[in-house]
Structure formats: C-alpha cells, structure tokens
Image (tube, rainbow, N blue to C red):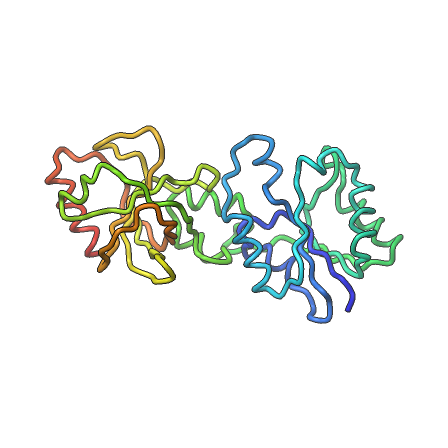
Length: 277
C-alpha cells in the first residue's frame, strides 16, 4: 500500500479540510501538520479551534495511519525545496493532497506552482483541493473563528469536525452561585483557544465519561468583575465534588449576552430563566 500525504494545519478539521483529507482507501494516509499553528508560534496568540490531541483523534477517525507532527520553530528556516525533499525521503509518497492556497518553507516561499513541479519530477500525483463554500461563504478556520466571536456557535458547529468545546480543570471560586442555589463549575477559559462571544450558552458537560446538560457563562463577570476570561457552568441534575477534575464543556447554542445586574436577586432570577431554556 502506497503512502499518501495530506499537508495542512487542519485547525478544526472543518468541512474544507475534510475535502483535502478525503482520499481513496487504497492509500496509507499520513497527515503532515503543525503541532501549533505558525501564526500562534509567531504571535503567541493562537485562537485554536481544537487541541493537537483532538486533531489527532479526528485523523484517526478519518482512517489515517499516522500523523507526522511539525514544530514550526524547527522547520521555519528550511527552504521549500528541502522541506519537500525531506518528506519525499521519509515517506516516498505516491500522492500528495493539499488545499489550493497551501504554502510552505522559509518565508512561505513554497506554493502550489513549486509543489506541482516537484510532484511532476518525482512522479507523484498531486491533489490540489479548491475552496469549499456554504451559503456564499468560503469555509475556513478564519471564518469559523469569526462565527464564534459573534456567538454563532450553532453555525460554527455545522462545519467543525466535532462541536466547539474545551477541557479545563475545575477551580474553586467565590461560591456565590452556591449561595443562590445555583452552584457552578468554574474554569479558566484556555488562552490558546478561539474566542467566544461573551454570554450564556446551552452546553453539554462531560464528567468522568458521563454527560449532563449545562448552562455556561463565558466572560469576565460584569456584576462581579475579574481580569481574566472565566467559564462558569451550572450542571443540571448533578451533585458532587469536581474540584480539581478536568471537565469538558461543549457549546451548543448561544442564549443571551453577558450583562451587569443591579442586584444578586436580579442575577438569580435571570439564571432561573436561563436554566429553563
């Protein structure tokens, strides 16, 4: 069975990516992808749609035999020609698949034209996938990030491999929710993750492989301000000590914007309404 390489960052393994990743079964499929996006390494601000581990899980479900991880700091000075030669020597591919705008090598000087020439010289089939559109919009990681920033999580989830989520450790808060009768699981929102519009969301909460319905507020608590982004989740029909546990929050629907309340009673009344939605 000959090797086929799929080249790309594949953040979110979204609808457009899956066109690149969809190959005939008679190839041994290998994903060549960055551990962390070049932009994230350069700017320190990644806005990832999923973790590298989640990306690898997606590849496995799509039938990939191997993931070849790239560290941007280790490959950023490699010429486009050497980058391709290294892949050829390591995998001897019969097919290479990538997106229409794939770039590679030092200063992003490698492009599709260079890749076509390389593949022709090596007798490698090249599959260059055109952009995938939906409703007049090109499906890209950038487009999905913009949807999340606008709170359009339902639409974003249509294109992502799995619904947008994060996993983080539950920390001890000020227990104000508990005094109102609505204890919450407090988690610091991961700094490397794509930003969600501040507000309240309908969510699914995964604890020890069990799932519960949740109502999650993402923001900086304008009623009781803090200086970082926090996730506060009321978990329906659950009681137990989960401090210190890694809990997964999956976002299903935006309910309302985050806002400041004049009193604790007003906040309590709004939470009761949120839970009924």
